[in-house]
Image (cartoon, rainbow over all chains, first blue to last red; front, side):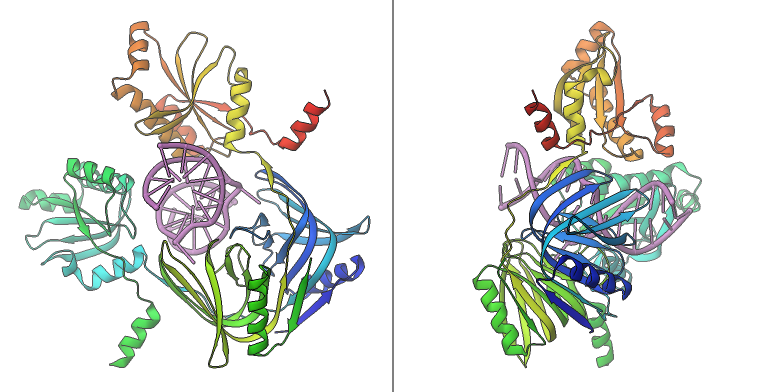
Length: 260
Length: 260
DNA sequence: CATTCGATATCGAGA
DNA sequence: TCTCGATGTCGAATG
């Protein structure tokens, strides 16, 4: 990691370091007393105070106060940063075109400014989501019920994509809607829409079902169910199956698999 | 601003600085090669790579990669940070109780670490939101249409809260749904739901309207309208009124008021 | 404490 | 480019 640090620089030296860092596509950190103005999707102003400024090589621009996770002001990736000197203050501007947004930081005093070329080739691995739930159910369909056979995933219908389509032991059609968190009314409604897709349309599945006099079962699969959702669910004749999303990383799976 | 910087510190020195900073409730920045594990609402792992770590005195803990506005991992305010040494690595842990969440950062190599006591007494002033739009319309109802009289704000119905309820010059009921940005299909649907609330329920307003043979008008108030939203809007007989959210800071208002 | 809702939401996927 | 949905959404206001 190549880096540089300047302590208590004057305006010109700080400006020089910023230009150098932008040229080298480095990540910049500035502890400084500044004033911030934003105009774009909204409008904001932050009066003089000490903050931390972070400028990333992808154009992201963050200003952090000493509280909260969220930056007090920011610009998204691909924003263009430029610096200049005005009235012996270092000014940093970050702008983007669509939507038109401009962030202006007036810096009165820089405590210290650093830049570094960061090397990071890793991406975050996560688990505990809807997709993982789907993977798990496809692998172990019996956790829905004995005899359940998934036939399709992300099955396209009028109102969107059905998470998992399948058949039960009696060959009834099953429509599964997955939620990784507590399912609300919206999930029940969505499942209801999928069911109507099969009722309304001249769907191949439906024809087959009519001929065989089979049922179409809607199943909401989630770790838990909201009270309001439960009501609607019963009214609509939709079933609920409690399933926790798997909290296991792919890496872990690999290791498990490698062990064999 | 009191601050301290350590370049290329060994594990013990870095640990010492972290402890000192935590004690002094300073804001810490670390450029380091690290590995991150998170377990809580979800589960994640980030393999070895160079990142920026930001620890704030309110307990917020951020890990930034060289891309994106959002931190790759984080902990919210009030989380507890502690550091220790293990296998000649500096380990930083941040945990909170409800929900139970634990973030572990293993640091193999610190490029530099800084801390500073930041002084910032200012809060962000903002304008250009739905709330500002609502305030403005309550103050100047004629901008919706001549003779419009707002009667209630955040009026509770089955499907949520109606932003503004009122009557037109002919005493017809008006339901206003406000959006500070371009309104999409979802906004039209929401307004539709509010309208059905008045149609379905034995609502006092509805009874009054029936007796007086009045209409119920749905108005979507936003700076602009998406194409798809426009279609649905016409189909549902909902009206659209173009209104920009006021982009004026309270500070400016104060100055205007003080001028009198 | 829990719930609800807005946000300069951000971000990624798909059309 | 735009739209849509998920997010460890965050954060504030409210009950």
